[in-house]
Image (cartoon, rainbow over all chains, first blue to last red):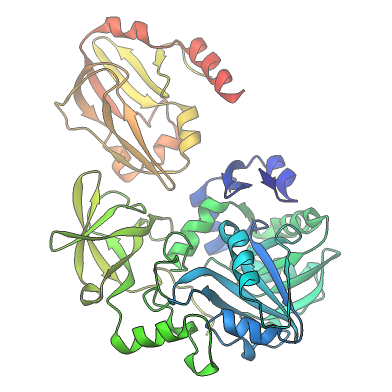
Length: 364
Length: 128
C-alpha cells in the first residue's frame, strides 16, 4: 500500500488508518463528529496527498485543456484555479477535478486518487494532434488542506503570501513553513480555507508548523471520515458515488461549469443535445423524515417503484440528521417532493430539500 | 480493563448477569472500532432472542453494524436513553451505554462465552 509523506505524522497522532484506493490514509484522529465540528467552528488540517496531479505543458496546453474539460480554462490566469471535469463524448464524467494555470503554457490538473491512473491514460490517449507534454506527478506532490473559519489566521504567520488578498479559487506561489509551495484558496468542506501543494520531501514541516500555530485556535487533524461528511453537507460531489461515467454533467446539476460558447470540447455535442431535449433525471439532496441513517446504495422508491439508489448518504454531524443525494426522475425533483428509501427492509419517508445542506455565513 | 463479572463474545458484545437477568452491551473495543455512534435500532420488548441472533443495529457516522445477542432470552427492557444520547455507547460502553436487558433462558449458554481474561487474550490475537 502506498504511504503519503505524512504517514508517520498520522501514526504519531494515533490516527485510525485505512486502505483507500491503494493508499494508507487516516480515516479519523479524534472522532469524526469532533473533527467535523472543528472544521465548521475553528479549523481542521487534512492530508490529501493521495490526490492525483497531472501536468500538461507546451504551446497548445490551453487548447488541450479546453478540449478535455467543459469549463472555460481560457479564463484562467497564472493565479487562478477552477472546478471542472474530464468528460466523455457522452457528456459523462471520467472524473471531476481542479484545473490550475501554473503559467500560460502549463496547467495542473488535480484529480481523485481513485482515478489518477485512469485519468492519466485518458489524457494521454487524447493528446494526438496537440503539441503538449503530459506528466503524471501523482506520487510527487504532497497536498495539505487547512479548512475552517480560522484557517487564514493560522496559516498567515507561516507564509509571506498575503492570504487575505487571495480570492476564492485564487492561487499563489511561496514558502509555507520554509517549504516551497503552491497555495490555493480552495477546499472540499464548504468552509473558507486553503490547499497547499508541495514537491518538498518534508511536508511534515508544514504539517507540524500548522498544528503548532493552530493550537491557540484548537485546530484538529482531520481524516477522510469527516472529509466525506463535510463535503456532503456542502453538496460537493464525490466521484464514484454521485458522479461517474454513467451520469452526465447536466444530470449532476453542474450545468454552471459547462461553457458551450468556448468552442469544442469532449462531450459538447451530447450535452448540448441533452440540454435542448431536457434531462430526464437530476441529482437532488434529501432528508429523512423517519429514524435511521441512509447510506449509499440504499434503494429509492417513487410511488412504490424503485427508481434509483442513494448515491451518498450519511449522518450529518452539523445538522444532526440523516441526509443524502440521489438521482430522481425530473418530475419528482421539486423541493418538498416526498419519496421513500428502504432501510433494512423498511421504507422510510424522505423529502427533497434545497442544497447545499450547509452554507457558511459569509461576512457582511 | 475488562470487568470480571461480564461475559464476552467474539463479536464484541458483553453480558452481565444479575440473577436471572442479563444486561447486554458492546465492548470498549467495539465502540472504538465503530467510532461515533449516532443511532441504535432496538428489538421490541417481549422479543425472544436466540443465542447469536441479531438483536438490532448500531449506526456510527461511517458504518452500520449488527449486534448479536450473547445469550438466549426475552427482551425485557431497552436503554431508551440511547435514543437521545447515542454517544453514551462511546463514552461508557460497559455502563450507561448498555443496550438491552434480557430474561435469560439458559444460563448454561454462558459456557460458550469468554471471561474477561480470555477476551483480553482474544483481543491481543486480533491486534497481531
